[in-house]
Length: 319
Image 1 (cartoon, rainbow, N blue to C red):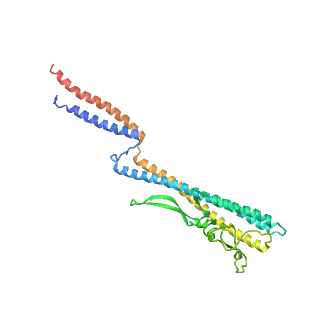
Image 2: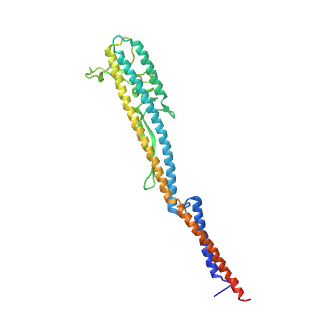
Image 3: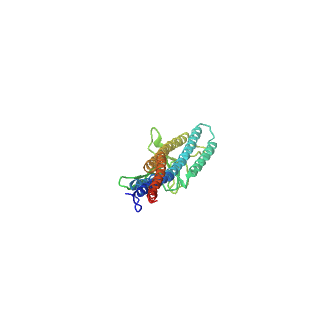
């Protein structure tokens, strides 16, 4: 039945056109924003996951910054330790040379004194961001570097740290000389193949610690015997061995921080990729859909025009 009061065809065509316009608007939004899930109303579950993971990814970015800062501190201490090892090795060489009969010990001692001053300069300069792990003022202990941010299955978050034992790498201590490798007493007698059992303590640097070392400072007086110089050499060699171990500890910490930094970077990239899979729009697919919807829109407009033209056809019957 044809009616001029109720145009069913026009209503149907308008409904189809409105649906096409709505789909076209949604597709245009996805193309302009790049997201298929841009709001919670698009997909509440995916939007919630993506929002949480984006927040966690920002936290991982801060972890990367903390690892970079921690690595810089370790690098500074490691560089200072290597430089100090070279100087102590040179002192050992000078002492060995001083054991030669007829050598002017006073001149060699001037060189040793200059090398010891260099050690003080190195340890006091190995500072980054106000922290010096080689020259300690009594605040010895473990230094923690933020290394991870994790969220468990229950949604609880935690921050992990990488710990470095600063006690093992301290070279000088202004608080207690026994805390520094260069300032503490070394029993040269215990370093002999056949110890006598009587302590013969030597230390390399005197930094005026609150609790000073009780042994003899390693220095040449000009009248040192071959046995005394031999004891100094053994003490310096022990110091050198301890410094080598400390450098190895710093090297291991440096490697661990580097590996963790690489892991956090890869993890952040993986999370970004996962979030993108959930909420990013497929631009190729959306482009194809846009073209199809534009054609449907044109056809819908034509269909609506034809449906509205039916009323004019009815009116022509009365002419």
